[in-house]
Image (cartoon, rainbow, N blue to C red; front, side, top):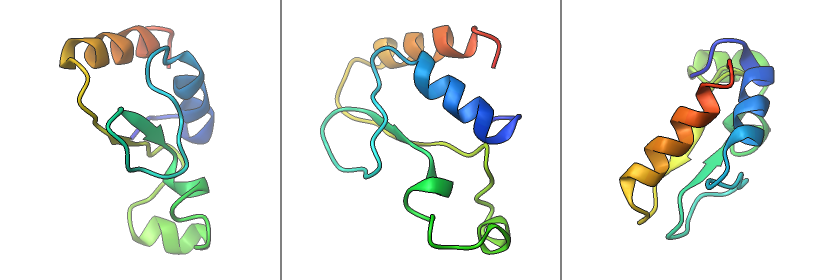
Length: 82
């Protein structure tokens, strides 16, 4: 979970160069999602909070890429001051 809520999530998703945003998870490629506006969008903010799904939460579904590519992508994205 990222401090800064949705703004930080949006900045991270835009900064990632090799991991695309996807509203659903289920592929051989690594993808990232924002549960508050995708999988759990039908819940109220109070219901999401009760489940621990806050605005700063991201979900990563790891695919079959080389792990160093993924780690490097997250490092460069987070280094942008998120």
